[in-house]
Length: 187
Image: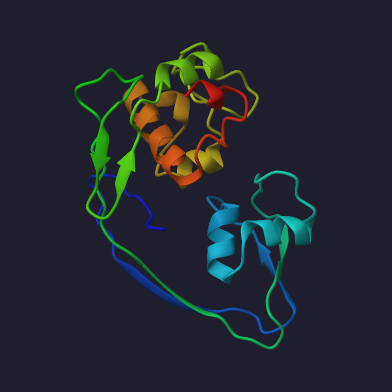
């Protein structure tokens, strides 16, 4: 899956890494990591990492040490390239709804017929600047790790409603309605 960078960013990075050859490796979570990025880095699945660590949700924290199971006596080499990608926010709709198909350089995002206003209303009463102190921010109730994982900067509740909707649409295209287990049914 390609990483989405902001319109003004243009970065091309190529890395090669070797993964431990033992049955299990450990990984210390860094700020901005997600289960998906760790699983991708080690060539395993999110379900395998959750199972090995007894996790019930996809939430991980910086400095948490995760056990990573790999195939015995195998070395996994992963070459990753991130290319410039642009995202065009819908301009013919309000910040709360989108019924357009938005195209980027390498990916097509389909948000047709989704009711972003209903999701925002359910999550936060539609208030883009809400911060109740529970670790979730803005009208789509992002946690900081997820917000940064979809290219957000600063705090979600300090971003514009249009920016929050754009990041929510990127998240939806990555994980569907799963990040909003109750309110996602309203999309």
